[in-house]
Length: 102
Image (cartoon, rainbow, N blue to C red):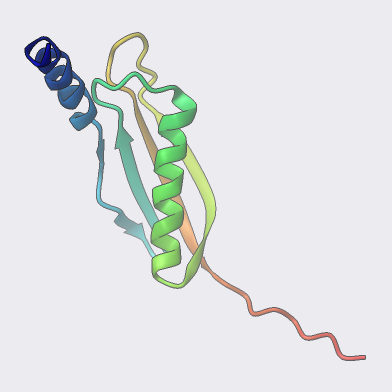
């Protein structure tokens, strides 16, 4: 029984391992880009774009800033082709809360 599941498990592992996230790279002052590629995974465009947006947000938080002005582009692949979403974004300064004096 276990021998029958081995090929399916190997295929599932192979498909899962094919997705990739690029490193966040600087393209200008406080402007960055990151790309997520689905590889052979069957993901929706929403899932792919959300993965890239989430990574952009994590990056900004890691440097003590907030995600601003995300611009999402894709390779418009269809069917079983590898889908790719690229987010170009800014990491803006987090404004401290304003104290209201009464």
